[in-house]
Image 1 (cartoon, rainbow, N blue to C red):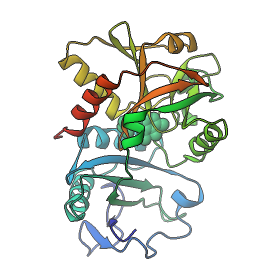
Image 2: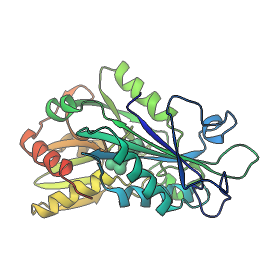
Image 3: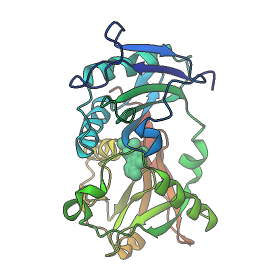
Length: 296
Ligand code: PLP
């Protein structure tokens, strides 16, 4: 972890007091030393939001899209609005300080802060990414798992925070372990009423009769920055794109499919619930070349 670079924000939200009125916008810190108090609600309740941003050759990708989702997630949790300018500066600073490396990531975390203080905590760190070559070139197997909510949960029960990128990822990690127990690499969540949602840390894109289709983003899933950029690639290539309600039958009938996310980018899916699927490795390579070349 010594190649990790960490900055702790002094005032993550303009509407809340700074941690130290005399201090700069952020403080450099040593990642392995303690900075977060044990009573921080981000730790004790997972009460906060985060973003993970791909960094290629020191440059954060889809930065404005990530910052926009960070603000929307914070609003869903009634957290004080993140000071986007302070966060942008801190993200760029940690990326610039990182030892030169082709692929890295930056992670922003905003919590409700120490219990009783009424002041959020914020930090951002950057570190080199693990090698993603195998997932991108050989593909991954997924299993479908019931998420336990209907597809309209975001509208009927907004307090469940589906569609917000909260720190409460214990459920996503449990689903991932269940997928591994079933011999797969990842899980694909399905709503109780039978609609395909998203992966544990990624969105689904299918190629269907020459079109790119992804599940609608108003069904309690994250609006993926990578998915949006894959659609930008498709539109540039003259490929039609669509946001739809996707059933398990639609999934089985797809010509090819990918899980897409920051860091991993596009991983082709070779197996769903133990059944082999066609992969389009030529298209996968073109998508990943496009994603890795993003300049903003
Ligand atoms: N869905 C979930 C549940 C995620 O955790 C993520 C990313 O971490 C995504 C989708 C993909 O989002 P992005 O492409 O912006 O990384």
